Amino acid sequence: MSKLTSSPAWQALKAHHAAIEPVQMRRMFQDDPARFGKFSLQLGELLLDYSKNRINGETIKLLVALAEQAGLPACIGRMFGGKKINFTERRAALHTALRNRSGHPVYVDGKDVMPEVRRILELMRRFSDAVRNGRHVGHTGKDICDIVNIGIGGSDLGPLMACEALKPYASPKLSAHFVSNVDGAHLAETLKKLDAETTLFIISSKTFTTQETLTNARSARAWLVEKLGDEQAVAKHFAAVSTNLDATAQFGIHPENVFGFWDWVGGRYSLWSAIGLPIALYVGMDRFEELLGGACAVDEHFRSAPLEKNIPVLLGLLGVWYGNFFGACSNAVFPYDQSLHRFPAYLQQLEMESNGKRVDRDGNTVDYDTGMVMWGEPGTNGQHAFYQLLHQGTRLIPADFLAPLHSHNPAGEHHAILLANCFAQSEALMLGKTAEEARAELAAQGLHGEALETLLPHKVFPGNRPTNTLLFDRLDPHTLGMLIALYEHKVFVQGVVWNINSFDQWGVELGKQLAGKILPELSDAAMASKHDASTGGLIDHFRKHV
Ligand code: F6P
Image (cartoon, rainbow, N blue to C red; front, side, top):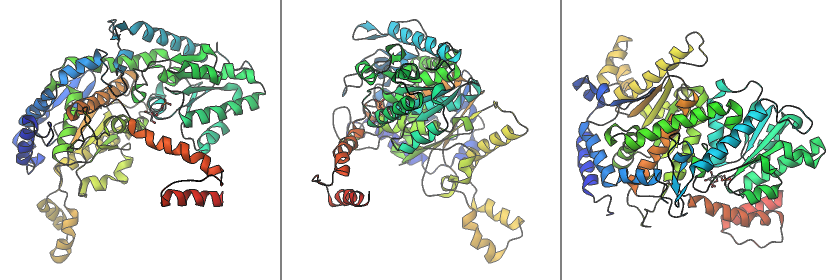
């Protein structure tokens, strides 16, 4: 048994789980009318209702004891303090410095990083203002109308998700496009709609070595030069965001259009850095800074609120509760806000790349589950697709519901219908429908005897399915910043409890290495390929048919 699973806090939770497992939440609500007040928290304009969870006061005490046993408060201090908590890469994880609005210094290796952070923010402001107000024009003197971000993973998902979420704030003169997939269709279909004279490409890559991004960047460059008939056009139509300034220079990006960041910013935590440049261009730098402000407000809450009143801590611990004690394997997120339609995809990288780890910080194979599968779609669409499994399937899938009180697009009853559905789903998941209730309903519909009995089991909902609901005023940049930071810190809390490094991603390397080996074999039929029979067979099939 590992130190964690044999620990007093873990064992206490195990015993508590046995006691709480048979208890129905509907019973908990009947017994305690004050349950919502006890298990909900407000942070600024954000409300977290976590009362529809299979918990009582004792559960929270025990989960907090687990976090304390793991040394969470000290770990939070180490992260904010710039310690090299990403020890396998010997790096700090200081995305919080990027949105530090306090004026206080943040040190890495004894050096305050804040002056550099502010310098890059200022460069972003100058560049985004210049593009937005027509001071930075294309090679032929035309205003920039289309921004194409070329990047993948953290250099794509965050800015893409945020630009989609903040559309109501976007400049009507600009469109933002995102090309990530090395499948040539992604770039080709995007370019089809664009005019080279008015297009600005941003090549976003922390390392500037990522195969997909560089392949797309080279093709985009060839397209631009071909369309404008001049190599010099690259200077006005390409910008880059990277920590690898030698590589951006080698690619030929004009130094004035290069925005640096630092190795202490993890890829999936990088939208707060210059990787957020497409966001700044699209909605303006003031709005981008509001996004940073929202994250900063959550950072302050995370580092100062007591653990039992700390929203990211509670979200993280509830995930541990279901993942490790109830055996849940996946975690869903349902934004009842169409503009958050890429939020689940963004969270997928955040959660699964961070906590998909099977050895602890000491290199021991863990004997407990770590990161859950994260997935989701906007409501109400999901209701007509996969909610069936949530309501009546065999698996327990804890879910987060997110919804704004106000819509950016108020139209008749749309928003009321949207929210009625959101509230109804979490209610239905919690309450379920007993056999007695289903029987009464069927009888009221005129069914009796065998017909009723045959249908009855299909009409029962077990309920007791846990959810959190996060409500906010409206999805503005500040609120979006808050939401993202909440999930970032949730992931951190879980990583601390599981004693894993949430900031490296060695698991993505093997596939990259093997793709590098296979690529030349695809085009050179004479090349001997040494693979297992399946991979060899696939390569042969490709060679024969292409
Ligand atoms: O392959 C995974 C990964 O390293 C992610 O962690 C990262 O966000 C993505 O690739 C892109 O990397 P880069 O920004 O260096 O191109």
